[in-house]
Image (tube, rainbow, N blue to C red; front, side):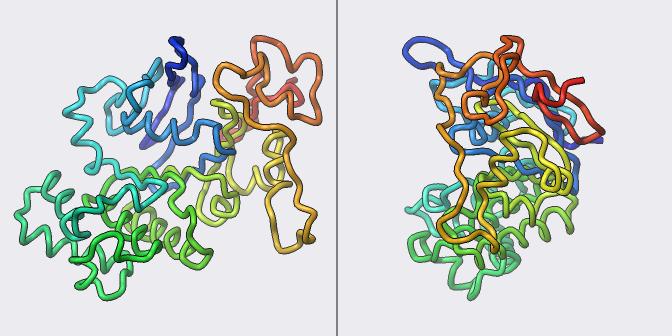
Length: 322
């Protein structure tokens, strides 16, 4: 049984007095004890999906349709008070930049303690004790000292560990991690990802939705992957199957553009063009203007057919239609 079931989610932004669809009819599921990577270039709508699930959209955006099934409820339909109890309690979130996610005016221990006191029946003394244990669990050195530090007094890696401590403080069933390793060196990045897998997936059986543009992060952390382009999911499958045999031309292009140890200096592949802006998306397949395999039927206004290959594998492309 799925922990999270997203069905036909649509999110719109108001631009110039008109509502433009940023996330278009996307569906995916996530089981407990599993990590799903949501991958794509900047501007594909990945973070918009995360903020839609958490009901944290800005004032010029709205959920325009779909269901967000979690814990027997539809998060798209519950009241704001109930949703507030979900955030930080049943659902944790790590934001892209820990320097802006953490409040610079409050000590780290106070910020963790506030989360604990908001969602659990504990007093300030117990919250501080629990906060210290959380800092130790995410491997922050000299945790007693860091408890009374301000965010600017910590390194980038320690700030992200503190953000992880806040996200997991109430033992959430689901963690949404939006680019949690941005701007971290590869050693610290690997440590953060290992903590996420160990503390959440392996020890607690929680589900993790990992949003990233880094295919290396997905390869080492996730069980399944969903490739997103211009507001749509174009390919899904297990990490092993998608990386070994990418079916959508966009997935192929992303993998070809990813550097590896065998990539000669100066020969990194690129994807021509850019992700179309809201209001500028072409009819039919939205990748067709950048695709090396474009055909006339790619412009069909009904969009590319969605081809289901097995339980986890699906691709939206005319090249794989029967």
